[in-house]
Amino acid sequence: MIDIENIKRLKNISVEDDYLFPTIADTMNACFGKSWKGCQKSFIVLNDGSEQVAWFPKIAKWRNNQFVPYDSKQGWLNIVSDDGTQIIEEHPNDPRPLILPDRDKLPRYVFGRYEDNPYRNGRIHTGEKSGLRFLGLFQIDLTHSERGHHEYRQIADKVSLLHYYKAFF
Image (cartoon, rainbow, N blue to C red):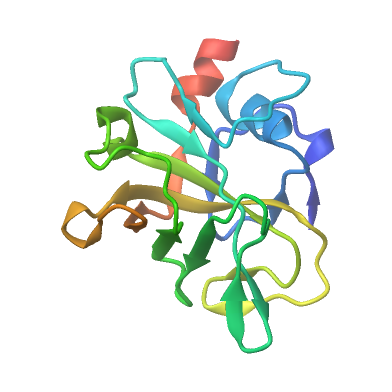
């Protein structure tokens, strides 16, 4: 596992990388040229002309032979497929409008937060500590989405961050 605290800026990132970001602020600083001290949002519009967003979903836990929300108070159930190319997002009381705003349709850099046993590339990695891992660039699949249930498809498993890197220096 790579110690992300010693990495100041990344030029690219891949699902194959072994980066573990402790916080959203650390992720935004290393990947998108920010200099944040903290951040509580899980959905961030990059506002840089790229028409992309960063999403930090809490990934469901596997308990008693079923998926349960990472945070039962918030109720979001985010399930990543075994091969890592699909994310299913469910919430019984989805607070978003029935017709999604345009920002929700933008491609999103996804960094999943796992409490335990993160799965990447079709394998469960036991004994790893919690943190945010890059899962890829995803796009909502509107043909399989409705209120309370949304599906996202991976459109890239490796992305260049040079746009953000060059802007920072």
